[in-house]
Length: 296
Image (cartoon, rainbow, N blue to C red; front, side):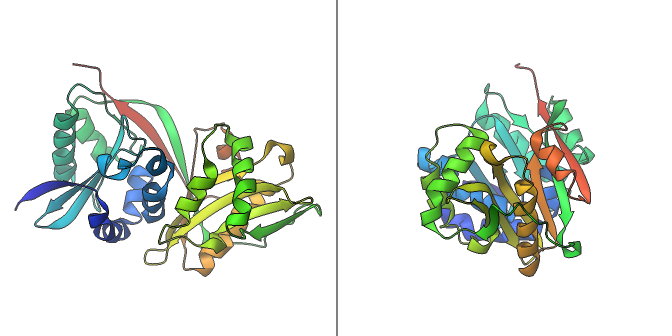
């Protein structure tokens, strides 16, 4: 049975999306990836800053001409994952051996779920060692939502009104996360994502026209799996329950579109995101630790 590797160009995009759908929610539980995150990665900011980024940092592994795995370096540097649709240690071993040979002396880092012990065995066999928890994934059952929360009268919860809202969303994101990225261009690019839904882009509008909080959701009706990323409240408006309100409103919209399992990533315990999401009745909490190895 032949196994081949190919750059993840747009020529393979439809096949890759079908593969990710078939891998939901396994890929989410294992690496924190699902279809919506993959699509956002294709249309995200790295594409704008570095043309050709998607193909350079993604690889298709085919077995008998069918996609069997995807190798992805989300940040375009050291961090990698090997997405499969089942617990297939031999396939991960093939992908890892290929990747390490390709990268030579350059370091690689993996952030698998701490629950994926079968995967840890493969990494350990190649000399990788487990480090600290780097990320968390919070899972929610959106079929069991209660009433939506109320917000102070100075705010309304709404969907994004298209490109006219992008400058204010960019201002909200800059206030929450810092940085000087051209976030308007990124928002325009993400809106070209074939899975984009305007009704899953939720804002809290303040009097005077400012956008005080924002979140963007995805959902794959085939599997019922979706995600929300980012979640942001501008510092001027924190403490009003707006982050909770936009997230729960997005959950309700995802449920109407066939969503069942929705995931949100955060930093480790104690981070601002983890404090918020722990209060939203999660059904699961997955930790992802960094695996690396010392230079030869």
